[in-house]
Image (tube, rainbow, N blue to C red; front, side, top):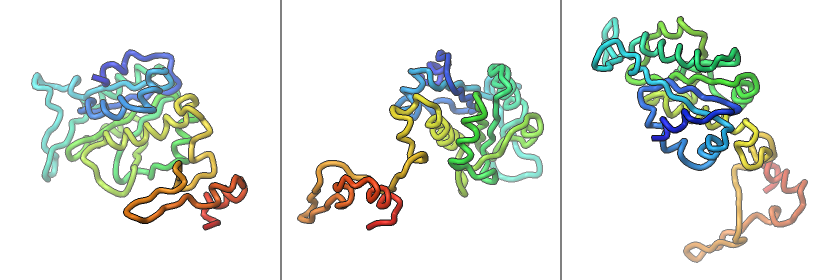
Length: 228
């Protein structure tokens, strides 16, 4: 549903091109809240490219047994390469970056996000599945291996959503208030709202007094963890 609808958007500030066997996996996340509004407001654009569309047989099969043996299946190089090639041609821009998700890749963080958001207009995400993608794809295109954490996931779709969300926040107009980005202001991991006192099972839980004081310097110090 959404995977097809997103292709209709234009005049965006950032375009994400996603190479994936499962574009429907993005429907829920992109169809809700901030990213949905960003797409509707044409602040970001998302396009999908399925390697199955470039399969070399009539059954749209893109996986084969690995050379050297081992469990699982490996995604063939050419269907993925053709999908990437299509995405690259679509961008028509030199400000394009290709990201390949791998547990052994460079650690993704906010500093990395800012650099990418500032330098590129098009980001191509290559999402692997099964035992991975034939490594020759990484020799065909200039791309960077990125890891969202020291763990292994079923596929690259979740990492793509994480990175896309983080980069989108850097695009002006995506957030209602651009200054609300936690990475650009003094922020605490703990936040509170009304009412001032919450009672649960006979015990009262109160908002820290400093937050009720109106003393901005003290509040900022509390947010930095320098005050109790």
